[in-house]
Length: 214
Image 1 (spheres, rainbow, N blue to C red):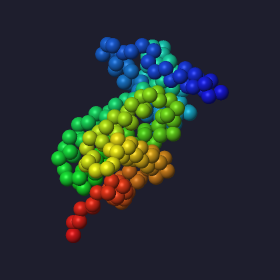
Image 2 (cartoon, helix red, strand yellow):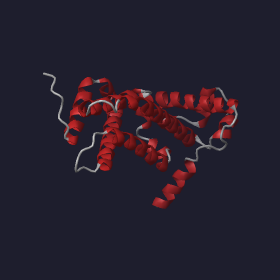
Image 3 (tube, rainbow, N blue to C red):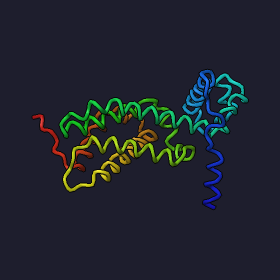
Image 4 (tube, rainbow, N blue to C red):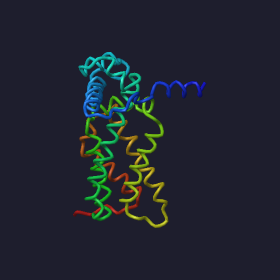
């Protein structure tokens, strides 16, 4: 039964039928993904079809099927684009954080994570419950490891602690909290109180003294 489900998922999530090599083809794929993103926000995953995506994108259904095998593969590409842009933003902006003192560095990393997660937040909320169904599991795992390595490198060294495990817990704790917020309390992503509470949570977990501003 499990093997059958895995085969069905693999069949549904084959991502690119033909990789876009020319600028015109890349623009067509980009237009399709933008259209799919809009439909995910307005209608949700289970209401959209490849016909709707093609119509929204202003392309023929044949043009869509040149690059994607089905609806799931289009959404898979949307997930990948979103995560690749997250990686780019984190990689660029994390450079300014490393020189900070430990108590400021953790807070700054969390602020950057919140800033990155706010991008296309409505789309993220729609993808949260289905991204592990449509996305390639190996790609998701690889992406999470990427963020773990960034956090691992920028965390202050804590004697006697396994820093790989610490970064694993911190990254997955943030993802879990952020995904839950996206579903049931989307306004929390802009709430400074939530940011403060999460900062204290991670600072206490890492046993880093909170800076006394009094």
